[in-house]
Structure formats: C-alpha cells, structure tokens
Amino acid sequence: MSNTAERLYMTVDAYLQAEEHSLTKHEYIAGEIFAMAGAHESHVTIAGNLFSLLRSHVRGSPCRVFIADMKVKVDTADSFFYPDVFVTCDARDVGQALMKRHPNLIIEVLSKSTAVYDYSAKFGYYQQLESLQEYVLVKPDCMAIDVFRREEDNQWVLYSFTAADELVLTSVDFHCAIAAVYEDVLLPPLAVR
Image (cartoon, rainbow, N blue to C red):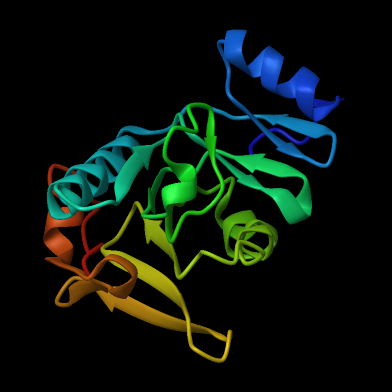
C-alpha cells in the first residue's frame, strides 16, 4: 500500500473493470483502492530471482508461480492484493485468469514505505486465507528473510534467515542459499548479517 493520500471508493465490479485498463495497479480493501508505486531495482531483482527459483522448482507439479501482476483475492476481507511473488497448488485456481484465491505461499519484498504495513495489516488480511501456509518478507537492503509459517494448531511461527543460512519454504518443499535470492542485488556495505 503506497499512497494513502490518494483514496478512491468503488464496488468490486467497478474495481475489476477499471483495473483491466489501468496503467497503474491498485490494491482493493473493502471498497477503498490504493495506487501502487513503482519498485526499486533491488526489489524487482529479488522478486525476479524468487520467481525464477520457485518456477524451476515447481515445474512439472500442479503448482504455479505468479509475480507482481496477478491478484490474490481475500474473500473474507473483501480485498485484492498484488503480492510480489506467490505460489498456488490448488486446483480451484486453475483457469482463473484474473485472480487467485488459494495461494499456499505469498512473498512480499519490503520497502521503506510498506514494511510496517506488510508486517501488520497486510499479514492480517493474508492470514484469513485458509490455504496460506507461509508468508515471506524479504528485506531488500540486507540479506535477511522472515518466514511466518502456519503450524498445525493454526498458530503462526516466525523463522528468520540471514546470509549464512539456507532458505527453507516447507509449503513447497523448497531450499536454496540466501545468496541466490539476492543474486545481482547491490547491497550497501555491511548489509550482509
């Protein structure tokens, strides 16, 4: 959610129709829409790396990986979001061309303007997705990734990964070096922790 000063209200149908022709993407929360700002190079590179790694990993399975331009609908919150990367393995999402409703993995690359929102309110919306098993937040300015994993008792547990770790995403049985996520990203000095 980027610009809270620019708020417009509309119905879901009006939103979906407008979004098909809009040059700017908007997230929708219960009638309120929010224009999304463009992303920095590191943000786009990290999202692209994750998409590529995950796409290679799930190839040949029923899972599909989406990046940036595909909407996720949270029915219980009457909301639509554009995660940076997400995976759905649910047959109910097959053939749904404009949005998906049953992701099991959602990844957001943080920015200064969205980090607090991504950790709090947006996470609250995503938690309403019964299919969601992991919510991943990637810091773009240092090698640090937080994974919130839904446990069997429906509690969310935080797992933090840093440069020396291997990233583990149990929702899609995926493992990779943290360095692979940050490939080609210019990090500030001393950003590796």
